[in-house]
Image (tube, rainbow, N blue to C red):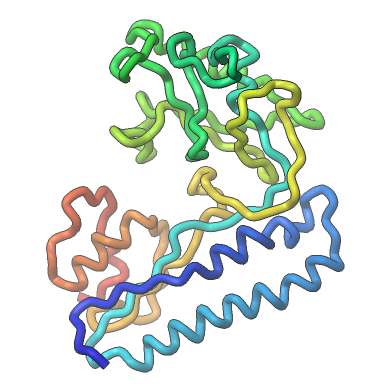
Length: 272
């Protein structure tokens, strides 16, 4: 009922339902039960139906000459096991615990933060209280690669990708002031676990859905849709990235892109 220039809205679905149910819908996960998947699948379809109804409402009520831009922030993958990254680092002495079982940063060279962002931090001297000198960094990275490369489950290597932001950051869009040092990717079906206790490196979990893996994985891909004046009709976007969304939308609106935007304009999406 009120006039507006820019409307920004968000729905927590299907994210919450996917996190809760996706693991039970993956037939390749150990312990898959078809009877549970058959009960959940119609419910998930109903969740997506409510999202579609919400989008339809916006489409019907939008003023003339309005651009609608839709994006989802990530994909989803079912998992039923987790690998204890800090426990692996602890076994080789890269991570040291105090008497209370907490990470001792005065002796720890590398650790996986509990925020679960798929990266390891190296405790370098440029960080407050850091202990790893610049000339020691390469050896610490080599140790990380070695210890994580040795983590196996049922004869398979679990850590399938190890990327150094110091050498690969610019090309891959990783690292930076608020990012990590060593980024990891895991075998499908496995998630990260930040607990440092080292009784078992691989633990079973109740199946669930998660994300945070290499964005090039098919399961991590998501949707981006543009509609309205200036949008090229029927054009399928190729190699679109989430970081391209804001610059492309800014171009459509005739405004400057966000100051810190690192993506590019999806020219193929524009009709002029």
